[in-house]
Image (cartoon, rainbow, N blue to C red; front, side, top):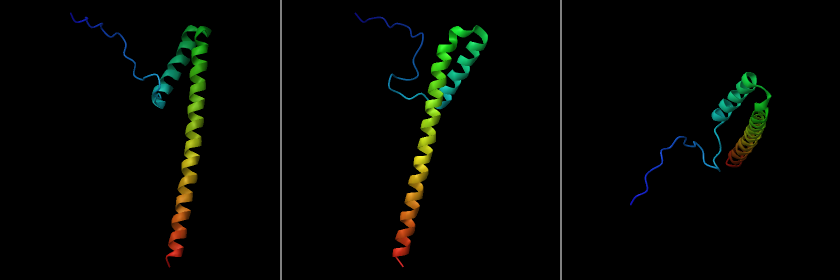
Length: 87
């Protein structure tokens, strides 16, 4: 006999190894800030963890943007060198 399906109360949007989108992270961060404002210090650890995650994500995005800019400049330099040698 087939096992009856258990109704889903909550379905996770992300798996254990998925990256949370920046917009979802920001929404959680803002929600946690509101919880601290409305319900007090007991929610500070949650806000602190989300604050850390926001800072880490912003740092990663900044590093990534710089790396892409360096790669773009390097590709442009190589393209210019090839043009100079073809004449």
